[in-house]
Amino acid sequence: MKKISVIFIIIFSFMFAFSAEADWEKIKSEANQKKIELLQKTKTYRKTSIPLLIIGPLLTGAGFGLFLHDKAFNGENSPSAQYSLMFTGLSLIGTGMVFNYYSDYCQNRYQAYDTVTQKEFNPELRINSKNFFIQVENQTKKLNVKTLRVHGAAMILLSLPIFALASFSIYEMAQYINEICLFCDVFHNAGFGSVLISYVAIHANQVLLFAPGLASLIGGIIMLAKASKYEKLSTAPNILTLTNITPIINPVSRTYGLALGFSF
Image 1 (cartoon, rainbow, N blue to C red):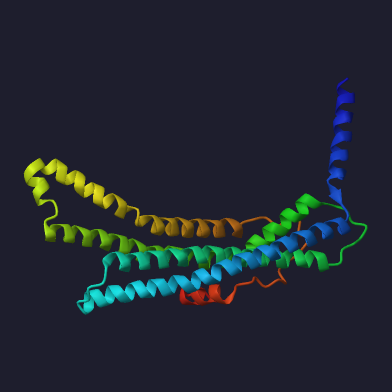
Image 2 (cartoon, rainbow, N blue to C red):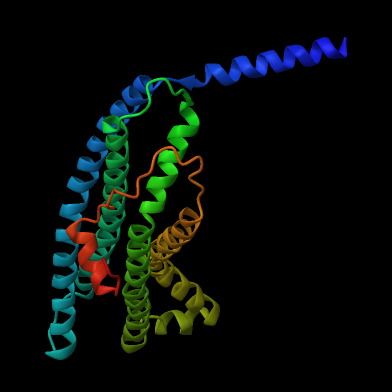
């Protein structure tokens, strides 16, 4: 009885293994469909990132201009306008960087699947299509290591001015409160406890200003961690070699990559 069970298990195992195999024409057809989807994603991400990376610096520059005019030339610009413009601008830049990375990533994946559709394979060779596409994805991820590192480092650096702005805005608010003695009447009438509650209520919203910086910092760390992980991915069995593919790094990524000291 045990021998019969073992024989059935072996037979079903072989049946399952062969059912997962596919000929190259089927694999090329799947790769062609995948590359069409990736091309559309690349265009969508690129179209989204470009306006963000244009509007973001403009808003940040406008806010910083008002800030500089206020501090250096005794201007009377609204502090809320200054900080709103700078925070919004820096947040848009960070979002644009994320979309820009995904644009590069999808473009590199598109190139890999395009190579599959054009490559000539032995028509008699059969292969497990799932394992083949896992290999394609792993090789593409390895090609994206530098792109991940560039964007990760840029995201981490972007978090620094956001944290600095958030800290300085809280400091300025505290100075303003003390200057106009906003809670003097509250202190005299209700005591220190009420003043403390009032302080917390005012600064609670300002603490949220750290959120974009925290998101940028965490996003950058995740990208660097992924770069380290992707670098160690296995591409065996080495049926398809993508070493002849040059990773795509668009001009925007290249610009801040060079600024960060990366070579291409």
